[in-house]
Length: 373
Ligand code: NAD
Ligand code: TDX
Image (cartoon, rainbow, N blue to C red; front, side, top):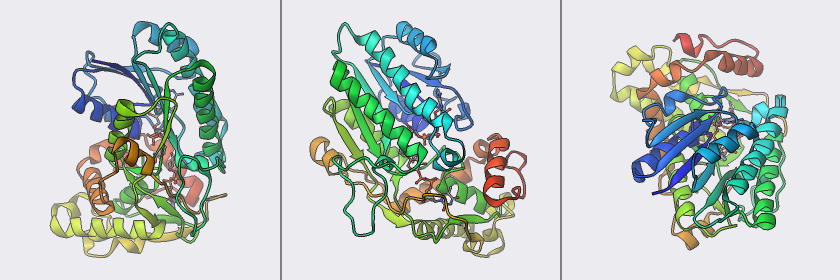
């Protein structure tokens, strides 16, 4: 039986990971530490938090005193560190908070782990969740990044994640802290905050709003279904070598414009199969038999927009026997189905931040706020 600290467990991937761990390791104890920023959502984890096997702590990873107290109260075997500011666009417009949370917050956690575990590192692990964005941008003909690719972050977000990765590695090298790092590609699935491409497109489509494609829509991402990512992290926690970095990719590279088209077609199929959806989402073009693709709109490009990300996940496959198994078609269908079935989750999301974000990008308010739908 282990005790885990999951930071950022009320966010998208952290909440999925907490659920995955509770399902697969019911005897373990989990403490979720989350500041509940705009991206955190207690609704995503409330069903898991029974107070005994899973406890929620509302707190800031930058608060060194609170973090150290938490390490004294719980004898953590593992830290799985997700907490971060995670949205590239936000880091373009206001990046200071990215340095604070992603760099300083990671530093605070490393110090707390080092201090709590210094008598013996036996059975301990600090696992840091990083991103493929630390490697920069690939040209069309370039091979996917391996773990040996040079760090070349281009956005303030990616730079803050790269800095946090270097801090984690430095604690392993200098102090012998037992760490592992995973650098994953773009995740998608249930509970993702609707500022990221896939949930934004699904919810805009359902509510009849424009589907904003940045630039020419030719930017390529490598999509990883979140449950595959959770299983990959578990395999690294179980069998990964200390001090190592593992890339996690979905193996599905696709230009944004094609991805959004596939999402529109998936939504269209669901409306054709279920007449009740037209009543629930009357503003969606599919409710009146039209294609949702009609909402696709080219908008001003993201400054410094990375052209292509692609991950080589062979090390994870060869060393730990894990490869992501969800096909893109299946993952997108499951994701669309989740947002269709869980509109109570997304309708309750605080609308202020979302409205502000939409205004920043389109210069107009959304037709209706998500909260009032
Ligand atoms: P998210 O934005 O959905 O969630 C982040 C969570 O961290 C939120 O619950 C938020 O409240 C919490 N948080 C933020 N600042 C905090 C602080 N100071 N103290 C405590 N909690 C705080 O992010 P996500 O998409 O779930 O990403 C999780 C991790 O995975 C991040 O480290 C991110 O860099 C990395 N990552 C994400 C993706 C992706 O596609 N989403 C891809 C690669 C890597
Ligand atoms: O409205 C949009 N229109 C659009 O064309 C949005 C929100 C995005 N895009 C494009 C930009 C990217 O090319 O879609 C692609 C994906 O965008 P995001 O969802 O913002 O993800 P990205 O910038 O690729 O970063 C993501 O992957 C790596 C996560 O947000 C990061 O946390 C992770 O580290």
